[in-house]
Length: 357
View 1 (tube, rainbow, N blue to C red):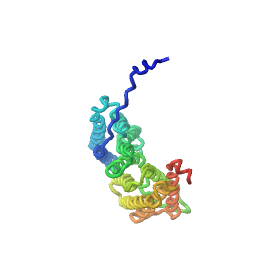
View 2 (view 1 turned 90 degrees about the vertical axis):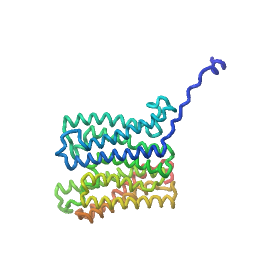
View 3 (view 1 turned 60 degrees about the vertical axis):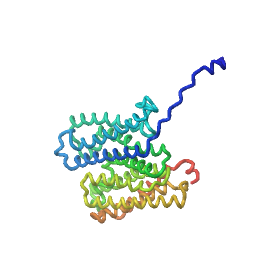
View 4 (view 1 turned 135 degrees about the horizontal axis):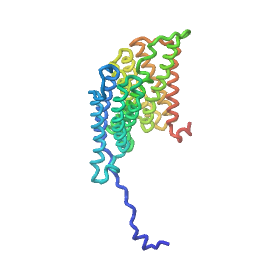
């Protein structure tokens, strides 16, 4: 049996040292560097979509822009831990501010995948369109980039999801991460090529018309999930002005810009952005009226998003080029996506709130 004297002489376990959280300005620098990295990604996507025949090597100006942006963002992420070495001497292991440890892992994943991508291009050549989106090395790059670029988002949440500049950098991190995911789902997005513009004979559709209409309907469901899920991540904590607008603008404009702004889909994209701004106004207003713990708050948020954004997008297609789907198709799309948005909101609702429904 251990004596009291022996117990008192036993050294106490060392206390964990608190690592200072990232400041608002540090998160802002991360968001700005991440944006520069995404502009490099956009330039590379544009090159893949428009001048592929002139690309013969991994070493292109567009890859240089992409990897320069990555290098700056990755170096800054590691510097944030290094500058805390006076608090945690082993900074490379324990010096990461809240939210940045996964970002550092993303740097490593992206770096390794970038080397693999160089080998892949050397062996198999340069991909385009669907092949570029499904290239294994590109998908691993997407994982690393998402972890890295969402660091300000996790930092914001760790800080308590406050407002002001902290909220702006957090939203920027969420938008950057969502945009990365959308790039590798371009084949399933509603923003391009605007399949409702294609003909569909309601009573005697050809096999190709039926296939295109099915893909078009599915694209609206997929895009709803892609945009509503991150919206609910933020809205579950607090109503944040601008989140819907930023998500729709980033994803839609990336797609149309990489295709050099085709008229019809560009008009539709801007119509959807305007509608998303209205979504932000409605959600903030609803919280002021009903409170942030109101019953069905998140299902209503998901439904409002779909009910405003997709009719505006379809109207934009009509104005820009003329929808050729019958009313049953485009109206049904709106109803389905409203249901999907409400369902996702229900899944995101906390159990305690669900019990009151």
